[in-house]
Length: 132
View 1 (tube, rainbow, N blue to C red):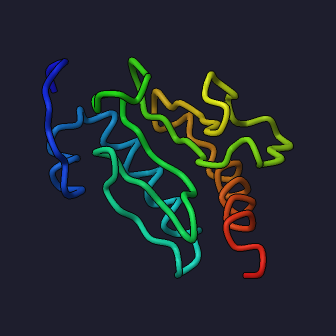
View 2 (view 1 turned 90 degrees about the vertical axis):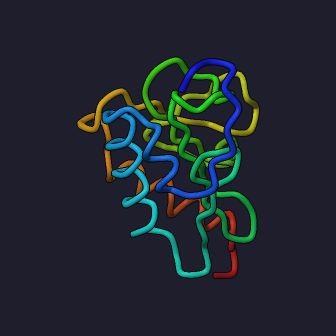
């Protein structure tokens, strides 16, 4: 996608069509981990042209570098919407300039640590639905 190109992505198929192979693979692996570990009440939608997962509130977002306004130049960002509230005992997430969203950027699929992500997802779901 060329810089300055304005596109409204409405489906995963459309998203995957414009992503370079490496970003497509990383995005797909992250989506599978998230989908397998979020409870049934949580949903996925395309928001801001990227996969966004939510329950009662936002849980996480997957932002490939190809999609404008993500703030990254390469790779795929996995951001936790309320990252600042997560304990993140393993210090897996980066605390960047955004005060709320903490994240991890993956430049290759082999950097993905499923165990760490699942742990953070469980904590994020607990924050989203404390009674659940």
